[in-house]
Length: 128
Image 1 (cartoon, helix red, strand yellow):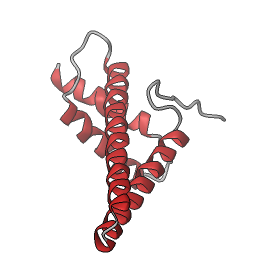
Image 2 (image 1 turned 180 degrees about the vertical axis):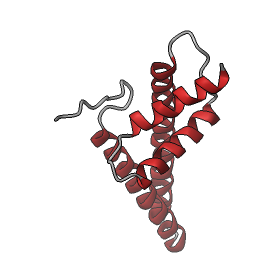
Image 3 (image 1 turned 30 degrees about the vertical axis):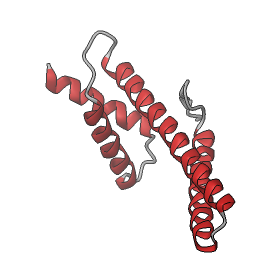
């Protein structure tokens, strides 16, 4: 039986998220090594290029973090309902971490969305 996968309106598929992670990693490694090499050799061009790459990595990471917060809030809203209060960003992050830990411990191959939304519904029940 095929499972239907949900995709975020802000970030796209999980493949796109992995690609953005690789872009962040590449920019950080390239920027850091260019910056260090430029400082050691005294080449201003490498220092500038390394600094720009590190700033690019920070910019992409910021965009990914913002999109992740939006995705978690939207999943929580779907689970709890539109008229109920949402957990704070900190509570959402804690529930996301707990969902990931539950998936790692599970032998059933649960998906993150299901585990996270289950925790959101439990959070809402405790608040009622």
